[in-house]
Image 1 (tube, one colour):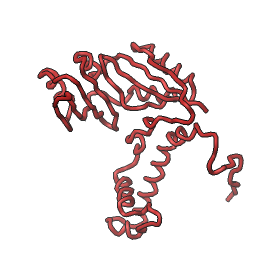
Image 2 (cartoon, one colour):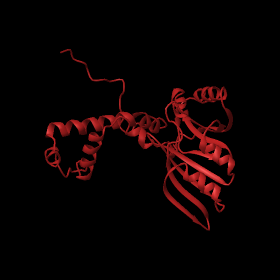
Image 3 (cartoon, one colour):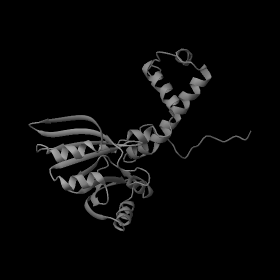
Image 4 (tube, one colour):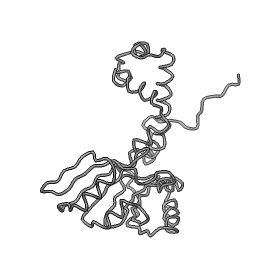
Length: 244
C-alpha cells in the first residue's frame, strides 16, 4: 500500500503567522500539546527591541539566547485555540499531521501523510474554501522508507490517560517491571503506593490499554508499507467464539 505526503502553505488569522510576516528574518516552529503550543523561534539576525517585546507577549519563555548565530527562543504559549483547529480538519479527511507547523514570511507551512491520494485532494479542496492556500509538493512515499516525523505526537499517545494511570505506569517503568526478566512484581509495586494491589493493577492495565489503543493508528501506518509479515500471521483464522 502506498502512502502519500503533501506539503502546503496557507494564510489565516494566527498570531504566530502574523509575527513572521512582520519580521521576515524570523522562523517559528510550532508543536501542539494538549492545552498549549511550544514554539521554537529562530532568526539569523540580531533581534530588535520590538521583536523581543513581541516574543515576551507570546507566553512563558523556557529558553532564550542571542549570540553570533542569531536568536534562539523556546516558549510555551496558549494564543491559538486547539479546539476546532486545523488538526481536526486533517483528521476528518484521514490525513496524519506531521509536526511541526512552520511559520515563515507570513505563511503557515504544514505537512500531512495519507493512505489515499484522494484524501489529500479532498483536504486541500476543503481548505481552499476559506483560506489562501498553496500546494508545495505531493508525492508517493517510497514503501521502504517511512519518515521519522510520522511518529506520534506525545499528547496524542497519552490522550485520556489519567494522572493516576500515568503515575502507575511511570513507577512500573522505573522499577523494571517491563524488563526481561522482570525486576519487580505487581505486589512490590503496589506496596510502594498508598493503594491496594488490585487498585494499582487496575490503573496500570488501563494505562497500557489506552496507550496501545492510541498508538494503534500510528502502528498500522508504520507497518502498512511492509508486504512481508515477519510473524506469518494468517488473518483469515480467528479464534472461535463460544457462547456462554
